[in-house]
Length: 323
Image (tube, rainbow, N blue to C red; front, side, top):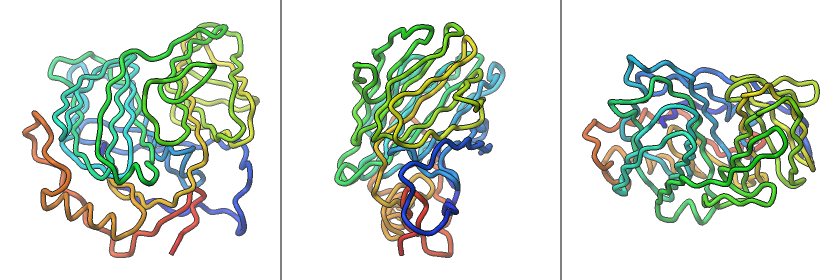
């Protein structure tokens, strides 16, 4: 998906980063995506740039697309990241410069690894379901994976189990003794939680992970905090478990991971480490180098926006600027 925002530094007192910033409810904001889709961007934010290696979280829908084209994002490039796509409703066709043409439907997971460079497009098929609803997330790749080759995987068989009144679908990582087949390059967790009854759910967590929870539909209660669609509850580090209550039918997304310590420069569709690296990726895309041609998509590729007039600066996960 196309990203164009600049990222301000996080405002916080000087000194070392806190061991556990605690729970913070973060409101999302609307961002147009392509011609027909608006997403709620939940990461990055001024107060919180990352959760583990998760560095972008976009939640879209539910949108009525019965008389509309649905998602229409033409070919565009990526470096230094993985895209993770999960649908609750609808259908999207992924096409990439490795030659993959893969529809994704609810209950299936797409993971694209950019490595040093890949291009892809995301479109609803001409005959598509009437509602589109889902999330797309980015995972920052560590050294040396970000300099490696690109890849793509489609997973239709994910671990699913019932825990009391909650159905758990494991997208990425490990939880409750189960392990996802999706490849992650840092310790990471992504899981959908679907409330089937009113009984609270209690999930085991890792103390060395930081976590966040978003409601894709319905409402969740964590302590005295209500999490509704359009907000992200950052849960911090040091938790051994999470107890939450949700209205029956609510669908939640739990994200977690070891804190990602490598500083990042995030600009447009690129995740890098320096201004020069981002500028080189932009120049390669403009010149038709490195990223290849997206299979079976004749639409003109998205042009890269102009680089800002000031130098792009690397930031830590806490927002500190490295010069």
